[in-house]
Image (cartoon, rainbow, N blue to C red; front, side, top):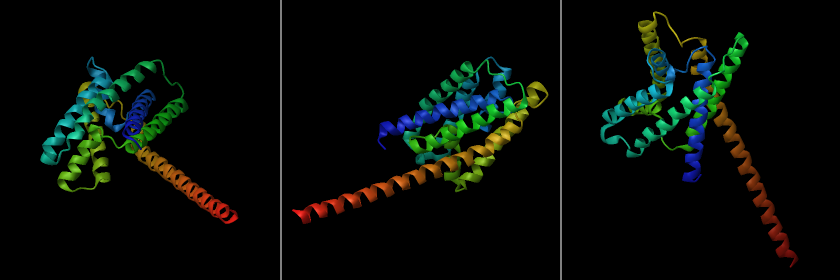
Length: 231
């Protein structure tokens, strides 16, 4: 995949991830772990979810060179402009879906599941693009690299630490837990499952395509041999 295509796939991934975050929020059944703290802060202060997400992500980015030191790759500076685009997408979709207010519980679930599906597609595209990581994953990667930890386990701990922080902020500002419900659990666990599913599907399609190409090459070689013998 060319560099231009990789960036295009990555940007498509950012779009779907932003859409997923917004749909999960609009489901009113919770928020995704990575957006939980920005969402709670946006309820208390006159700034948008995207704006708080950018500030929060920038803080996570600044921690990475402090943790990694000389092992911090300069290309990861691209996390900052990519995060800006990502957060702009979040606010854009929040504006587009401002009138989306599910009524019945099944409608809340449908919006939530669509958000989870969009998140799964977005993360898959982000991985396929292989451009840079967003600050959330970048900080986890820095911690894992510095202290030689397991990425999957550390990511789970990191995500639930964010959820815990959001719950504490909500209790402090509102006296109750807002933005953290069953949808938070569903989005946290379903994203990894969906990404694994999509990656496996893409791998199978690639294997089938390689198989067809090899079969076509064999047919072409046989045709060339037959033509050579008849001449």
